[in-house]
Amino acid sequence: MSTTADAIRSADAHSAHNYHPLPLVVASAEGAWMTDVEGRRYLDMLAGYSALNFGHGNRRLLDAARAQLERVTLTSRAFHHDRFADFCSELAALCGKEMVLPMNTGAEAVETAVKTARKWGYEVKGVPDGHAKIVVAADNFHGRTTTVVSFSTDHDARDHFGPYTPGFEIVPYGDLTALAHAVTENTVAVLLEPIQGEAGVLVPPAGYLSGVRELTRERNVLFMADEIQSGLGRTGRTFACEHEGVVPDVYILGKALGGGVVPVSAVVADRDVLGVFRPGQHGSTFGGNPLACAVGLEVIAMLRTGEFQGRATELGEHLHRELNLLIGGGAVTAVRGRGLWAGVDIDPSRGTGREISEKLMELGVLVKDTHGSTIRIAPPLVISKEDLDWGLDQLRSVLGA
Ligand SMILES: *Cc1c(COP(=O)(O)O)cnc(C)c1O
Image 1 (cartoon, protein in one colour):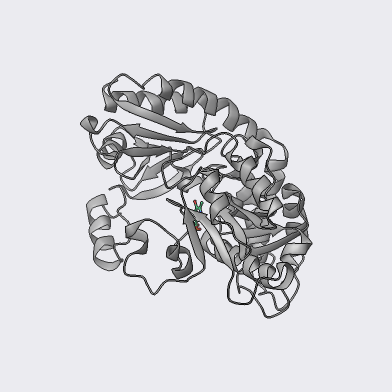
Image 2 (cartoon, helix red, strand yellow):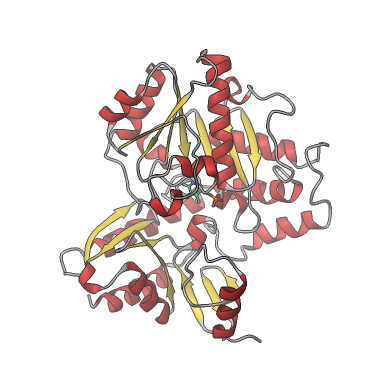
């Protein structure tokens, strides 16, 4: 068995340094807990940035995956397979929409949404070819492809990856007036995270999402909600848009849709939008493969019970109550979020987000910093209240609160 230091040295030597992981080496995991190569246990309060909403090694998801592994795993889309229609119709129904275009990663689903909006703009709305504009928000995170980083405002994500894809307009997040000014007759879509995850779990002002909905409907523009991180139970609802009673034209899904087992993403919309694609115009070898569909179907079935949304609501209220008690005590300056999802701004006098994350790791709790002095808390929705309280105890101890 490799020691932690050896494994990290070897990873540093042979992998690109595009991440700065916390210095632990995970060997196994179950539920909300991970075990490292030295046998130490850690409470996972990050859940793969919400890819693990249903916890590690979830029985239902593993059983679904195992059964499918024995039957057929990949066909490509050159043929039909017997899990595809069910996956698409069930996911469409979960979203209250008519059609699904399955992909693999989140960034691919965002790319697919961008292509959908442009094609819809030219063929349905009547925008002159080559002139389509998509309005996005500052401080967004939609993935890492060259087109997606073209409309990022994060220097690390964007710098030295140009030339950039044109056709995007960036407005401040949460500002309806700025958005209304940015929309022109060539605008085909507004693309937003209903809660900005990477930016530090930023919840927009009340009325913003419903205002975006109203504006986009009036101006014949698609409202595309990137629910890759905010969706599928995390905020206490199936979709974060539901908190404002908003139904976007296009849902972009990923992360938890693959149950932490396989990468599964999708764009979900009505026929008048996704119907623009004809054979050969878009695709993916792995998109909608039998294994992905089998796991995705189980995820959808689990979400349909409401059990996980209920847990996120209940435990989330507890989490936010406890975190809010820390504000004003000199350690925490702000807490944001919804459901079992929180961005916690640490007073810089207590250390950077990275330092707090490392100290928490030493006490057996895993979180991740984002943007300097913010830490992001997003445990699997299956976490027990006792474990959540224990994790909060460790946080209080690290913060000296
Ligand atoms: C993670 C994430 C993505 C990108 O997903 P990948 O699977 O990493 O490509 C896009 N949008 C949001 C909101 C995300 O949180």
